[in-house]
Image (cartoon, rainbow over all chains, first blue to last red; front, side, top):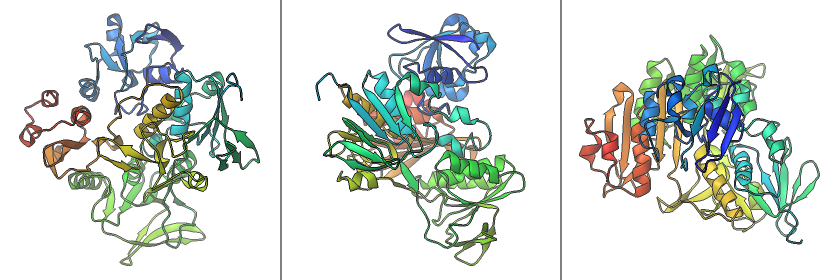
Length: 106
Length: 412
């Protein structure tokens, strides 16, 4: 299982094992990483699993979907490297991935 | 009790709300005891996929879990499953269970949820007559569906329509029987109802509107059809009854906690007893944006109240109330609703329902935005969430101008 790191807004880092085939959001929730709320459980309906993908990883995490972009356009603190972590599938290529979290999801 | 004795929290109900409030208490730093009682045999899980992704086989049982099983041990949350709390003694500050125990609490959190409304008609006890609230219900429904099977759905609400869509994906046929003149009659605008009727019929669902159900009929104890009020029979292998839900408030009411159509709470999720909180479908809660109280059946509501209760217990400052929101996945239609139509006097349409990408904006007389129903139009939903929370007004000609981006529309 690839190891991925979530960094909270306050700088606290959480490195967890991410199960292949699940989403990055599920890796966070399954390991009780604070700051990924994921209210809708991965339906791309709520924008509460917002992360910033470190620039060197953007190619490997893929591009935003259209619905995801529409959601993110209205999220707080949105940046060019904003993603919804429920829309990023975990693959071997994500070994060592680092994402950062916004101050809040609500 | 001395100040150094760890405080004890008892949570009644191990659904989405009960599980969330336990996890949130730990996240907020509560370090006393937490015991969660649940009637069902499994740890807290997500109910929304039971009629959607899970029913279609796109999600496995493990992915339904709110948290992995190891989380509860790690977080020192005692899960007491297959155990029902039968009474609350608010003077002694204890609850008693059907296992014969008496458990003390400093704070009690009720997350007892809602149960499916039963129809007072003959045949409800036939095998193959199902409701859909729990994972066990969903197991039975899934086992009964498959190629060539016939599903009859009594009630054209969200659960019924979602189950019908999922049944088609599994190769079954589905007939939705609705008493009112349109599906989603209690919970959606006429424009949305019309669009969902078209979408379902186009994809092969049969919809009977204005149809009374006289009885469920069977052979050898198993359901074989739904008898309509006009005498027609809708044959089926399985019947799903989804005609709304009622709050599980009896435990609270019997203990003298004040109830309406749910357990009455304030914006800290506190009941009439300051040491007793309630979260989720079982509550009758204030809607500050709408100046009234209401009962909401939704995951976002349960999660918001879980944060309210945990925050109040942990001494956090209250956070701004959220605008209620809902979602429903049927076929390739993603419905997102924000707000409630209370106080709205007219609607404005953005986009063309025929394209299956559109939104219905609900406005008050003074053009204040009250609710948005968005189908495959996520930006309208997100803009609506922002604008409703601000109490913003919107001009009708701008809403229906598709050349204007939602992002610009949302600018003050």
